[in-house]
Length: 63
Image (cartoon, rainbow, N blue to C red):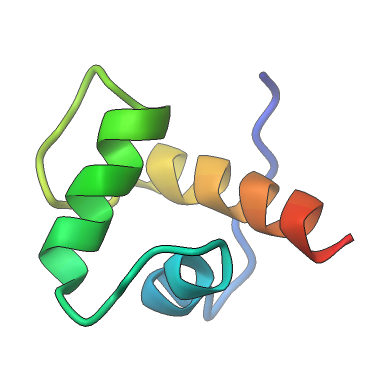
């Protein structure tokens, strides 16, 4: 998968909410996202690579 550069000001929590995650508990939302899409790093911290995956998913969701 080719991941594009994340735009400046990218809002991770808003993006997670748009693609369907319950973000009332942001840590749980990040963990759930990473469990489903990342799988090799389940820490509740979004890396640039993780944000790139989320950004790509967001673009597909908004089409």
